[in-house]
Amino acid sequence: MQVLFRGISQLVTCRGGAKRGTAMRDLGVIEDGAILVENGKIKAVGTRQDLEKEYRGEIYECGNKLVMPGFVDSHTHLIFGGQRADEFGWRLRGDSYLSIMNRGGGIVKTVEATRTASFYELKERAKKYLTQMRAMGVTTCEIKSGYGLDLHTERKQLEVIAALKDVQPTQLTATFMGAHAVPTGKTADEYINFCIEESLPAVVREGLCEFADVFIEEGAFTVRQAEAYLRRAQSLGLKIKLHADEMTSLGGTELGILLKACSVDHLLKIREDAIEKLAKTDTVATVLPLTTFCLGEEYAPARKLIDAGATVAAASDFNPGSCCTYSIPLLIALLCIYMKLSIEETITALTINGAKACGKEAVAGSIEKGKRADFVLFDCDHYRCLPYYTGLNLVEKVFIEGEQVYGNVA
Ligand SMILES: [Zn+2]
Image 1 (cartoon, rainbow, N blue to C red):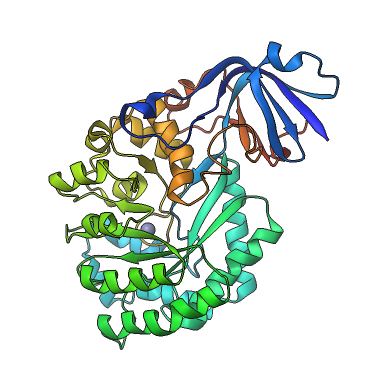
Image 2: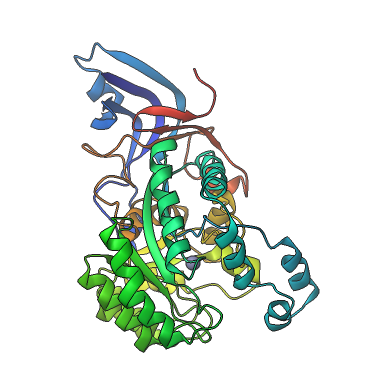
């Protein structure tokens, strides 16, 4: 079945693959554009005039509005039990993380709640989050485990992701992040060895993930521990990502470069020389400004990374502790206003570069022949409206594999 989507004031295609440096400004815009969709895939992209020639099939009128690729949220922790709103209030009052931990808060609280939550409960909550994310235009999403810190619960989180693939339309990437924190009662070395010997082989054998991720930080894992874990993951066939240089610069970015990671994420404390090195690689630099905003910290040097020629992506980092939001409008505002990205760079970071960061570059992140027909219709006629309507959601309709999954049906 074919459908021609036309009446697109501006078609932002983001064509030509992931982009670095100045190329991030190129959105591949087609004025008065059209998209021909066949069986969930994009069959042709061009101007209305080009695509209307000899076409006699079904038509979908877009009402002279902006159409862009669906957003890719390439970094989330959206499967967890419980919530930590009390802690947020304590933090606003100025309480230290240590005093919050002493009152039973912090990641330990989420780990306990995730261990006791049922599979069904985790799945239903995640489904709700993904539905709300779709309403803001997210059609592809990466999700990490990492709130079990034991094999049983890490597997349960990954099995929830697998189950979600059958009950909702957003395209998902699953990441094993057993090495998120050190579980109570174990040393970091003991636990990393457990991940290397037990957890990683088990989740790979069961086909539950495409990526492995690790948190390199004081109080979490060292570069040496992370390297052993990531090399094991790679030997088992997984692609890798790293939480690097968030609060302290321990050399996580350098490790990511050494191991040819798919992405290095956070980067608030990335060293100057690491910016230059990273810019020369194919590793995506993923910035997570919502977390920075929620914690009131200084933003990662995204502007410098782009100016140096890096491939920069942006994602939500949605998690119950440091960043309980997946707001795309807020994310766009922060990227433009505080991180000094142009709107074009912001859109590239949230689409095709995000797709590369989570291994979906071949199927998502742009409107191009052969890709999935995942795109968003906005209630405006130009992409410059996105940051202008600050913090407001302009998404009117969302299509995944050519099917409308959000918005009023015409
Ligand atoms: Zn994270």
